[in-house]
Image 1: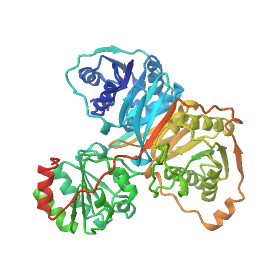
Image 2: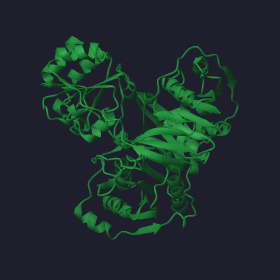
Image 3: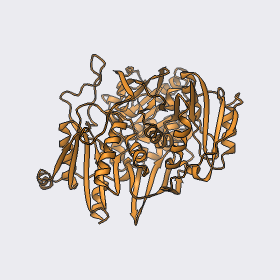
Image 4: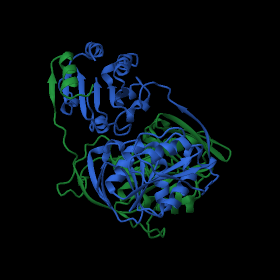
Length: 309
Length: 249
């Protein structure tokens, strides 16, 4: 078996999710190759060659692959991928964008967001926002899979010495072009990648009060999220929404502040390692999933917590 | 410009699903079913494009059981002009759905196809991208803003850590994210009017599409249950537990 892992990167640096994806590949077993597609990606390719357990790095460096437009990258991956038993990518916005297009081009079903490898052809994945876990077997000649990073401990970023090989193939569909991007300038980590997440709910009462959570989050190096109730009430924008229809997070520590714990919110955070709930209503359902519950007025508890951590 | 919108009938997002005792799937008996939330956003976007004079006709399509006609009627009440149901009693994979949608695209020749980014039951996030591959069209996934100008569409996409804008040649495929719009509710007069709008029923056989799959679900289990922990009495105790017991700060 040989496995092709699509490197996750922004053109300059290799993203950590690549290491979790290689870890999933290592569990499947066999030779692991990594494809780095983009433009001016020498540094990314070098970093990929250092990853422990990687045998070969394929580098497709061409203007057509800049910004990793799926219309151009998917045909490349499909062409290279034909010779592999598995094609893996991280379930990031990039991986989710490109890989189904690859699967359709290879005429195989994809398995999305696996959280474990049972055998070379059988995997588990959450469905219904994690309220059920499906065990799925693939009979496809090439198994196309996205990997949920939180399901696999990353392999070491150093220690490998893979051969680096250039790929000459150029695919330019000409149907799409990159216009621009606006990346959040926040110093806070991204919600889905953060080790600690502090979230606020309707109990925050208004958007201004979220400042309490930002202060606490900055002290903890945490990201800030919100429940759907807080988003629907207009306290915060909905890119902060954690839940079934928002972002799914699984940090080391999740602190739910003034969140009652509606089903749709629990679906988005219940895989967190440790859950803390601060709520003045001791009957709130959030306490049923919390490792540590504190029945208290959040306007007193949060500033106190911020001082003590 | 004709716009095709694909919608899926799924378990309502407020329902707490339960896994069947024999682990063959989740129990859908007597459970409230609705239009997938991301598909509602797709319908809303099409209706807004029509209100702006960009779209001239909205065709809504669903692939699913006979009862998916309910969701198609909802879409018609929200402003779609006609509906197509590709009837299939079995659970289809995203690739099979994309192939059926490709057949509908061939038949209808829309300039824009709008789908939800994922269904909240299977959570695959595949169909739009697969349809784009099969049609050879450009794809604007996870859209938070859509602007049609001439023979192009500019799509702002929600990506990890921010937003990206791409320009696609029409025809193109768009999948919706949460921030694209806030879907309206159907008014009673429109619900009544929707009953008279045309709804065509097709079958995969009639479209000449095989729905064979390379994926097989072996079992569906409940996730490891999370048991309630302890209540702490003070913030001091909480911090002490987080530092010394859980070791997460």
